[in-house]
Image 1 (tube, rainbow, N blue to C red):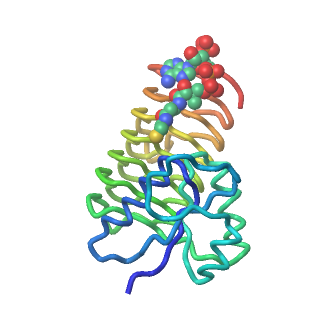
Image 2 (tube, rainbow, N blue to C red):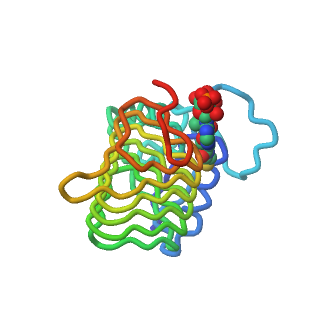
Length: 216
Ligand SMILES: CC(C)(COP(=O)(O)OP(=O)(O)OC[C@H]1O[C@@H](n2cnc3c(N)ncnc32)[C@H](O)[C@@H]1OP(=O)(O)O)[C@@H](O)C(=O)NCCC(=O)NCCS
């Protein structure tokens, strides 16, 4: 029987994650609704399932899992930590049109979208989002609450810290076994960037080749 699940978020990505779950041929989860704490009235909400506060969702289905579907790493971390404290299950959600080997380790609450390919010896922290059509090569570590936007390519021997946002179409070039290319905690890699060298923490990098633009 399908397990009930809420989608935390009521933006575009939240609706995409609901679709991703609806596609599951094994029907592991059934989306019962969306959680939005903004208190904003959502005009023209296009999904047939309800949007409600966290408190209401918990009261309605206390046993339901929650998948945090907000792209911003820090916002996602904050919500996920609250869920952890409340002992709410945060399952991994994937799409069947995804290729990943058995040598990929995923932390709780990861979301992996269709078209992405992940090869071998890859370790994810918790709450990592891999959007559409990303590739991730061998010997890669991706820290908690990182977001890879659509079409990001991460080459082999790369170590990405926590709360990193990598914009659409960015490429991260490879490191070596002795010296992985590293991306520090809290970095933002702009859309379309090509990161050729290790990146300092809490810094925005942009361009080809990517250069540091500002501290965050
Ligand atoms: C990086 C980004 C988040 C903007 O951040 P910001 O803090 O508002 O950055 P700013 O606009 O202040 O730009 C800072 C500098 O980076 C440059 N820059 C920003 N984005 C850039 C990009 N994608 N490519 C090249 N340069 C870029 C700006 O031109 C500016 O350069 P300058 O200081 O030499 O003038 C945004 O441009 C971006 O790339 N977002 C990713 C969007 C995305 O992938 N969405 C996925 C949706 S699923």
